[in-house]
Length: 67
Image (cartoon, rainbow, N blue to C red; front, side, top):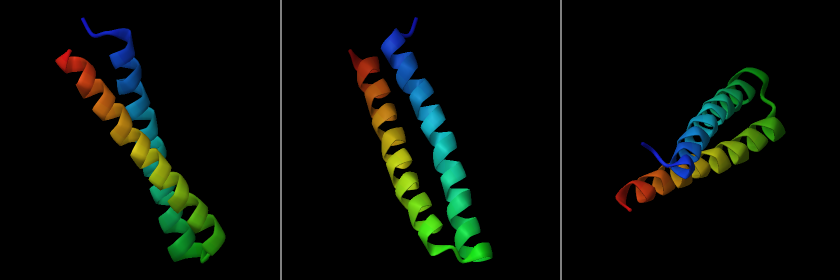
């Protein structure tokens, strides 16, 4: 049975993965369709943060699996 902490990291990776994909969609939309540079920059920053969080959650979940 998985530890509760590991399950939270897996859930966190899923949620941040969803946010990453939505921010990628917002980035592309604002660059190609609307030419809103400020909103595109905000989406790019949020996308980078969420992608880093996905990496962190996956790494933590894998580290708990070894112990």
